[in-house]
Image (cartoon, helix red, strand yellow):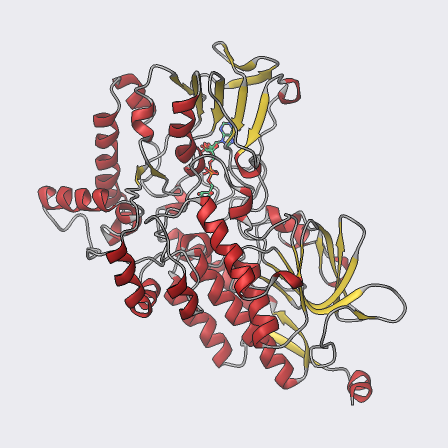
Length: 559
Ligand code: NA7
């Protein structure tokens, strides 16, 4: 129990199993802050289990060429510690992967977090013990841990989506996966490289690989509406101004739809202005870069198909302007889903890459991939010879990373079975039948459609507040009730259906993974509204959850 198991590795007496108040899985943005809150603010014993040999989470694994965050660095950073904000200086407007990883290493050292993180350890099972009201967590190397609480900090994009092409094992060249990129530099000079995928990852990677490779073949299934990132070095004056205004900026983050504010105003309707005015505003957003066109132009472009079409057509025109060959421009032009309904990719020189002599675009809708051969990829039209093949095919998002841990709740219920028709969560934080389990940025929370560090901090603070409350009241378990869970699922669906986002085959919906239930897995009501709902749940005594008190026998023993 929280008030009796202070200190790490308390022996249960009969086995060598280590027991903690909380076991957290993952040492990325979420796991690091969760550990800090639990250990340093609440004084609990907490153990973080991390598969990688280093902190960083997604920013440890995704180290492919061009990997970069497309939210400005000073927004995509922790807000909980003003001193940390002041002492860290970002070198670019949008930070590249190595710099974000350095930042997270700095955070781990600054808050002395490493001593409670067990690296190189993969969690392979997590089961709720109904008798003991504890989670029993197993690792790939045969270790068993017990904890009153089990917190997933594995994030939304922890499990790769690797399509099963016939013959993929027979490929004689080198195979790379963007989410498991080697640590040594990969040099594509003189090589014939193939990239499968044209999502946000591939769009970052393709221009860089094209500059090195002898030849690059891009296998595209769905063209994307990519808009310019407009990255630049951070200048001293901007850095000073940001550092002087951090509190104000953080407030503004919460007021904006996706957790990052814009210098210009977001106007209500793309249809309420003249074409000329609209074009000017789109151009201003295009020049500002990042997500400005997507969520910083007109409020109705993600809600109204006609308004959306004005932005879609603006991007299509830009593609036509930038790609020399009209037939290639046409292949790169999305036409059958709304602008911004798939994850908005940000680009630097992406479209111009297709003007290069050493780059070929293969539309696999026209000429499907038949198989991987020892020498390359055979489509319905011909074989493309390759020395290297890069899979930029994304993730089994939201649920893949959780299912991989083989989580079982009450009476051995598998999470996958409980979520057979799609994830069932209350607030994206907890799920019925899985007491004392929390999922940071879990399915049906704002997660990836809000600024992730803000989503993460809000969840970590909510969870640690809940654990403090339980300690204060002597509660042993907390469990989401089925009715509010069902209502939350319905509410999330209703909110998503008011937008155009469910109209595209995106990973938000699970559409990229064959056989996955088609359910929109992100709460789209905005971070501020979501946070106020979570706060209200707390104000109403954790409405929608059931607590169980310490059993009388245990209470007597503890006394
Ligand atoms: P995405 O956005 O899921 O992109 C994956 C790409 O791979 C996308 O173009 C897919 O086409 C393509 N893909 C997937 N499976 C296949 C098969 N079987 N054949 C051909 N092409 C395929 O993943 P990313 O890694 O780019 O981005 C994920 C997030 O990571 C990103 O949004 C950031 O938040 C960080 P499709 O569009 O499904 O037709």
